[in-house]
Amino acid sequence: MQQPAFGKTDIASWFGTYSNRLHDDPYPFYDYLLEQEPVHYIEERWFWIVSRYEDVNRILKDPVFVREYRNAMPEGTEIPEPPPEWKPVNELLNNWMLLRDAPAHTRLRSLVSHAFTPRTMQRLKTGIQEIADYLADRMEEEGRPDLIASFAFTLPVIVIAELLGVPPEDRELFKDWSHVFAKVLEGSDQTPQFAEQTMKATSEITEYFRLLIAERRAAPREDMISDLLAAQEKSDALTEQEMIATCVLLLVAGHETTVNLIGNAVRLLLTQPDQHALLLERPELIASAIEEVLRYEGPVQTTSRIASADCEIGGKTIPRGQSVIVMLGAANRDPAQFNDPNRFDIARQPNRHLAFATGAHFCLGAPLARLEGEIAIRTLLNRFPHMRLAEDRADWRPNILFRGLQTLPVIV
Image 1 (tube, rainbow, N blue to C red):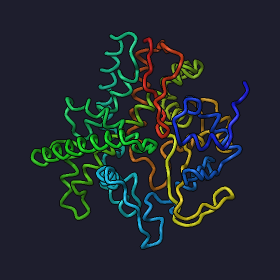
Image 2 (cartoon, one colour):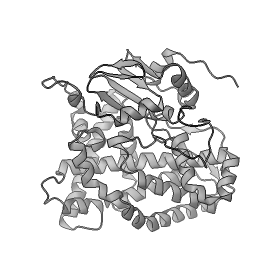
Image 3 (cartoon, helix red, strand yellow):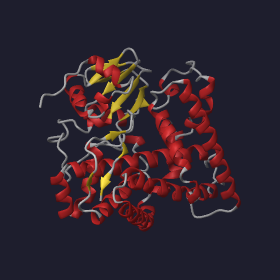
Image 4 (cartoon, rainbow, N blue to C red):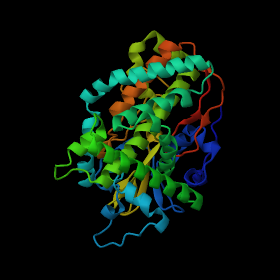
């Protein structure tokens, strides 16, 4: 089959208007980037695109590349203020560890990291399995469920809600809030309508967690918010605004990515009969299969950094203060790093993919995402070994940053 032709205009349009042509199957485009434009500057949008594994890995690990614009520029540089309508959102995002550099990032991360230790994961295992079994029971009753709505969305939202201490009756509120902040992270929608939608979501979610924190302060329980409040005697403890922001970040990062991981894994297995059969025959490959899903159809396709000094990458100089979009999805298909990278192989070894990034910002929730993914896919395979797709065409969400399905109708 002849590969579609791409050019430099496609690179610019990739980060402009959403295009089904480029996003339904981005991998031929990634092949083009890797072969022809591994380091490319988009003048119209003032940032660089970097796609090769070696370069992406270096940028993510090199302290020269930072997250905060103020840390990239000389002291005294005037930092442009966000538009007034975006100020409440920026105040929230400025307390996300994901978007901070050391020492703030180190402090915020250390205060939350206990929730993702191996001991905590072991404690969560039974509960996640019970949730997966319950959702599988409901799927069986439906006969032809939408796997995203009935299972992939619901499982991680219950898990992250229980982790934070959100009451079951409030879980449905998370859906719209989470999708709004996923689009905020993507950064492509700058319309007044989306600004209004974002302001509303920011106000609602901030007030929600403010009230929940007040409840836990008065009556602590066994959840993360209570644990963070218990640590407030420490000099480096989270402020209330930081705690609210951290709860929002855990909601978005812990939910959006895992929904995509589960949905992408099921679709891959149902469209790759040989790999589906292999996993049924050798269930011990489940962990390896999840790693291959993360590499082959990663839930997060890009991240970004800012150069804090002139730096040469791939034979080109990236000047201080310019942004770099690192293409995780392309790096994970780089033939210089992975043998036969466009083949889905659940037994692939080694598999040092960058789906969770690397360096100081390696995904804090990676152990939880892996655990949920393994339990979800093992449960679905055991319960529905003959499950098949109800529709051939993939219904991808129109989002450049996150790669996941809006719906996935299946016959169980």
